[in-house]
Length: 167
Image (cartoon, rainbow, N blue to C red; front, side, top):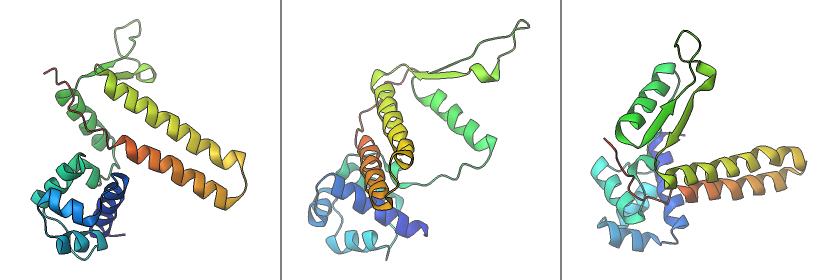
């Protein structure tokens, strides 16, 4: 699946999660209806400023539409560093007798309860999705239940409150 189709699918998914029509999204974003239709079909790819308008109209973060390839330790570390710089993230770990951090004891917690609650909701959904395959052998039921929890996870991304920056 190419990036254009993926962004268009995401626009459509979040528009539907917000119970909006294409016409309503067009009016709220200030983007022509025909253009919204082309984005959702994957015929056109929105420019960053258009994507920002769509995200604002949907009340979500523009980052929801972007895909990040996380393939290396550096990729993960750069995300953690960015989170640590720009959000109320507290990272800690136990130390050994020589004062060195113990890698298996790392803890990360946000100093914003809304973020922690959203992460816990995500973990609950993820746990339920992981259990589905073990509880039922009917593939149709499994797919239906996975779609249900995937929808719940996507709805978590609709909670777009500003975080309390501490730096």
